[in-house]
Amino acid sequence: MTNNEQIRILGIETSCDETSAAVVEDGCRIISNIVASQIDIHKKYGGVFPEVASRQHVLSISPVIEEAMQKAHMSYDDLDAIAVTRGPGLAGSLVVGMNAAKGLSLTTGLPLIGVNHLEGHIYSAWLYGSEDKPPLTQPDFPAVALLVSGGHSEIILIQSHLHYERLGGTLDDAAGEAFDKVARLIGLEYPGGPSIQKAAVFGDPNRFRFPKSKLEGTWDFSFSGVKTAVLRKVRELQTEGMEELPVSDLAAGFQSAVTGILYEKTMDAARLYNARCIIIAGGVSANKALRELFENQSDFPLFIPKLSLCTDNAAMVGAAGYQRFIANKFDDLAMDVFPTWPLSRVSL
Image (cartoon, rainbow, N blue to C red; front, side, top):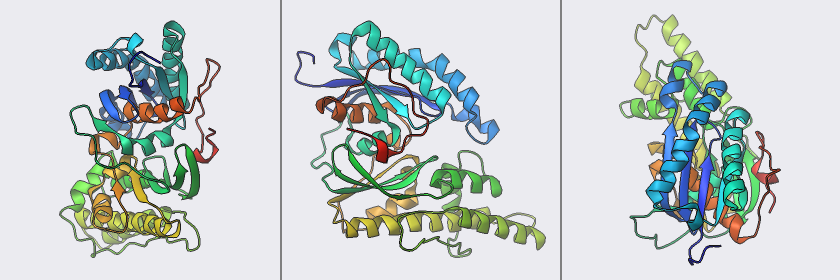
């Protein structure tokens, strides 16, 4: 640990298509957070192309880390540890961040901490900017977290720091993946989440009432049914000779079905497990309709990261790394990536 009272962690994130590095203090205060996005690169593919993503990480990782350190006005002597996303994610992308973290650990002597990507999203709920006032309250336990992104849709019960129980998750597409696929069906661009949200503003969510897959008796989700329902409606409208699809209404109906079931199941879980708060995190937590559903309830204190922290970033990795640092849970240079790494299997 440095001579300062504060604990400062360098976070590194390369699990998918965002190259990011950040310096986080005491697990909550963001000193710097640099994100190099690849969205424009992958738009022409309609989704993330793994080989392209890993090559872009190789080009971006060193400049991004250097910028994060410069913006923090720190040297490596001012840091206490390096935290890096170990998984889950794209293998080639993860390896780039892991190798960078190992190289820095080897040359600086700083301890190394492997972080689960989903764990990072959870701890984004504790973060605030260096120019912001510290929040008056922080998440309390037990907490129920809804993690919704392009690759994951899960309800997690958090009994205490670093203790997670997966209650349920998607049986097919993740919510973000369903947004991407439906966006393509109705002629909207990638990424689907922002495109559908924008189109839905002008739509009638009641014109097309798409099904919510409740999967009674479980905390699981399934979005294949609503996706198929949209496809059938599009074909039906085209068969009827409609020259221009009612994109806004289709988007609004789909968005209402997905956000509605995410909200209902999360609220039910929070009630059953006597949660002290609800945490919503992951890329889909940026969806305005989903945020409004939870913001309009008054049963539970709500913690949702600000929009810039919903998508993948290294500040959340630094925040999760801090919790492992104070628990004395470190890794070594033999650490490998886990492309598949359920949060329920994260060990203390």
